[in-house]
Image 1 (cartoon, one colour):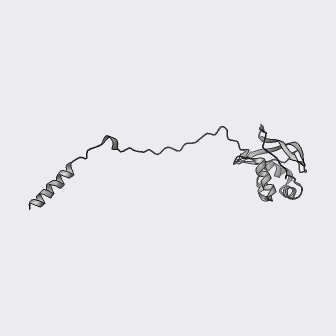
Image 2 (cartoon, helix red, strand yellow):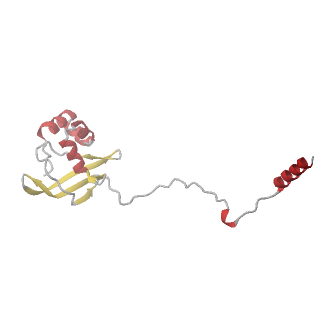
Image 3 (cartoon, one colour):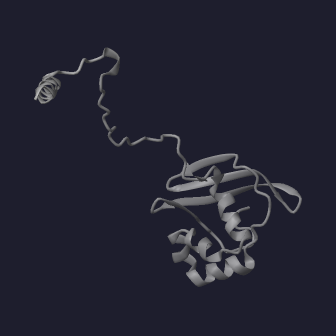
Length: 153
């Protein structure tokens, strides 16, 4: 009987006692940060994973991805020349397998973004190549003004 009274009194005392708070072990609440939208004033659509759009398009050409080249061709070029002619041009007449180098200048003319490559090496000769692009549906697409072999020179 004495044991049960001691256990009962001990449990009541422990139930009503407040724990001693330590100044160093206070609980902190962590608030979830709100979604932050980062404005990138220096982002350029002409750069794709730190490569220029010209190098990207040249890679598509070198790997014979003509359908992907068509998807990165501007709508105004497709309306002007037609899808079949452009696809045939990419497969047979388009010569884009030369060293472009790094773009030396990126400049805008209205809605056109021009990538200028001043250190392009075409058949052993250093030349300036300007490739026009435009933005359509948040992607950069190439503009062709003619369907000749030297459409960018």
